[in-house]
Length: 278
Length: 120
Image (cartoon, rainbow over all chains, first blue to last red):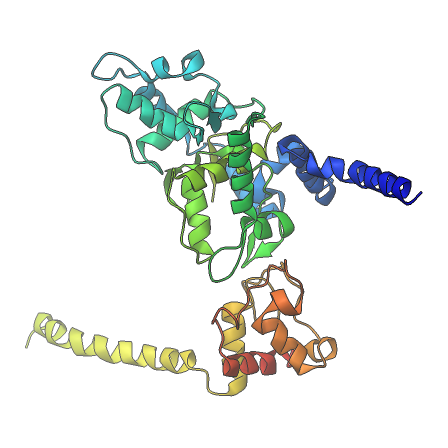
């Protein structure tokens, strides 16, 4: 009889814990997006991509005024010119990407089976350059940001669709990005999670905090503070500096895994990049 | 001495005197005199990013506002523990930085902040 009780209890425990053990990226995504839907029931998924401008009427109006003549348009034009100008060997960036690089930005970062690592679109642009005998471009701003702005513009309106394949290395990269996102760093001991999840919608020193879900849809972005375009990893570094932490280096495995997880959070939301922020 | 020479030779000393006059009140205002003023300066520096309180014009709303502090925290020791290490005194996942444990405030400064918070 004791043995029967033991078996029944074991079975019950297994049934209860099964969904927890099997929780993967898709289950995470559903739970995370549900959290924000519940926290901000009046905001649609598209609204969430408007970040802090959901939470301050005056700033929203200023932002909409700026968007009458979006400052990123020059970058799109510059990026298109760079993208379509042949390398010295006669080839162009289009030769390195599927669909000639058109309308693919919303599917990056991607897990690369060959290297077993996450590849950002920025890294692939530079790989393309090197493959064609050109020097790589600096990662955070300038020409590379313009090229990404052009590529992102061809994806505008497409639903973000970052895939995490069901294979151990890809899942490990996703989990690493998640760990970084939720880990405290710096002397103030803030995690990305604290400001953009738990405290999203609140103000920190007079600035409204945007929601984690939706943020990745508008990168690269033109920031008035920068006076130009910047990539999402430039923003991560700025954020880390702001909290007094030592920023992760761009395009390292840790930074790319963070971008992988963070961008995955916006899956299903239309890409709205390049964007504009104060 | 023509007007040009007067302006050439006098503009330096005039500027020095003017700058001194302007900077005297600024310098004296930078150094809080009383312990309560020192506590306020520390609170403005470290607390207003997340908490609203009187005199904080760049206040955040992440944490609760600082009002009726002596009623809400009648035990001084409790407030001291929270400021020193809220992850231990409040909850492990709190967003509040460990101001004491991470060296933002020494013991004396924590007491100055508490004294000031008790005036709110």
